[in-house]
Length: 280
Image (cartoon, rainbow, N blue to C red):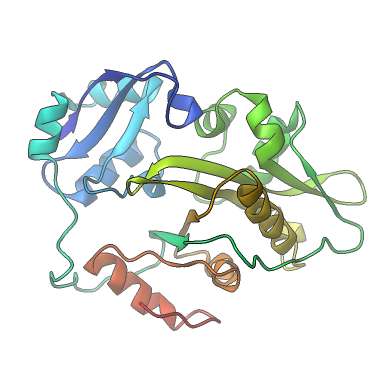
């Protein structure tokens, strides 16, 4: 029973943070839960688990080195395919006593037509990334996110260093004191479940401005921007603890992604806490 990792040198493909770097696929040969616990020990978030046929985390840089230092076994890519645990079959029995208190879930929108339109409330306006907004992004996320450690290193890992990409993809909502109080990013994943997807990524509003409908114009802006940039579908990840956010995503036409009995059990228990119905 082991955590396994392979090694390859990435070119200019996939997420920008992986370009021209040594990378690896981190997997478990035992269980998905073991994999997620090990990944959390490296500082990775549970929702970064890649949900293709083989559950894995893409790691590079200091996370790659740390994985090896903490006992991940370096093997060939062929060995990864042979030994890695797979998602349980769709007809497997669901796990007992699932408690969706703070679990990672994914939601999909298989088209980007008919995006709901919400304008910014009076006293607020939207603008796109400018140099220096890295710090503003960190301040917003640190204020709004009680589950993750926010840092400049996290920002770079998520978005890379190509400011041209950020200028067309990262949106902020600004108050009448010219303070950035919310953000969302029209990001992308060229290989989500084997297909290219746009990604609604890192949506956050500072606590003192929450409850004023500010996430709605942000979501309108990033969904339209994804479509303008050529994406025809989108996904997002969130936590079951973020019920208001899930309600917003349902309102915008995102639906739960159910890949197996664990997802099904979580969404069924969560369903009674949500404002909007959905079919699974």
